[in-house]
Image (cartoon, rainbow, N blue to C red; front, side, top):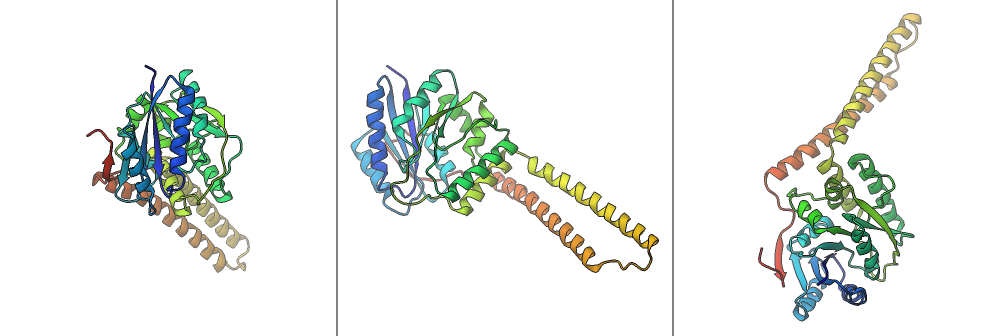
Length: 312
């Protein structure tokens, strides 16, 4: 018997695409051979009939597990929920819209067999919108600066990891999970393989500007204190600049007593310093608020119903 591969798919507004994704997984795994597989579909409280599609698939097959979340918790929380129900030696995560080609999963599995712990798909040409591509670039910069991601490593929503990596991620009970950060914290044996990125057949991306900002905040507040250190450095620089400007003003007054002290310059300095103080206090407040929510044991997700799932 070959290894067992678990596919985890977070689902949102995918009633028209989900069947095709499952069919492509079936066809691909049949061609690959030598591997058994299971599929875990996580409905992230989609407003359409996505869960009815999942329910239909689960009624026909015992190798498909369906999970219905009580409300929209986000893609990363949905992945964490799916990880609870996988049994495979390798776990593959992909999107529900068909843009991440299940037909090329063999490339990821081959790289895993070479000894890597995690393998991310790298797209030769992304078919996302300009807004989504901009968000991806910001996310890439954030993970590199805040989380120590290697510059040449490309991260995407299509990836494969060994089971021990998933087990380690499940130890995280933070109500703001960030899967990329958990993978980077667990292993450095990560590789890329090039795959095709398809155009979206129907619908639009579920990521709004608010969700993208929330994702970035999850990343750097959950795994790094660098923002606080940057705030400290900026505070020191601002204080030094204020001292030097004050010294310059005094010297200027002694050299030429008739030169008026500019009201506008003082107001500009006050507004700048006040803005910096408010920004830093807001950042500190964000950390404190997340600590408070974590101490209150807020859940990563709430499962409303499970289909074909083992009792946990």
